[in-house]
Image (cartoon, rainbow, N blue to C red):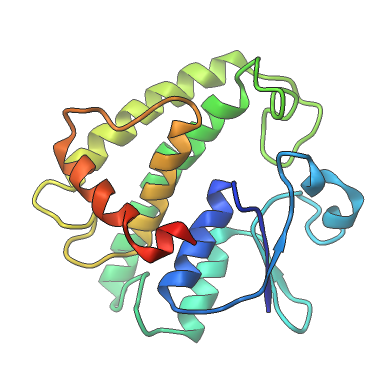
Length: 211
């Protein structure tokens, strides 16, 4: 088993954090997204979509979506559960994880990739697509969505140590990666969001956050 990875990219980081929380040691193959290596023939032979991360099994089977990778590893290594232990918990975590992903991760991607002065991505407006120029309207939409993300994150953390309660889960992984990704677009946790700031300090201090 090996993970096609990119040290600076937020989605591969989600997979790395999950792997670290599980205490696993999976070999990694670094792919340079900033330099466009993911859009070159060698990597496209591995994932024609040009996206990371990709988990490749010993028999050649590949998963090219972060949550598919996490679900697979959770099935193999159920100790330290990060996706829930009951049908209700699993559904609740999946619901909340999607909120963090769409309102946080994807919204930031829209803002970051569509800045006209972003020389690495201004011609790659959508992930995995080359020669698509920046779309200015996506910056506005992404910024507004991030405002909603931070509003609800503060609400979800009211009275909770972690987003889902007392236990760290995949929801926290996606959320902290979204918060750090938003910094790339010069968007940070609002100073009045005290619940979120407290949570962020704790989650960022976990060893997995440095993975």
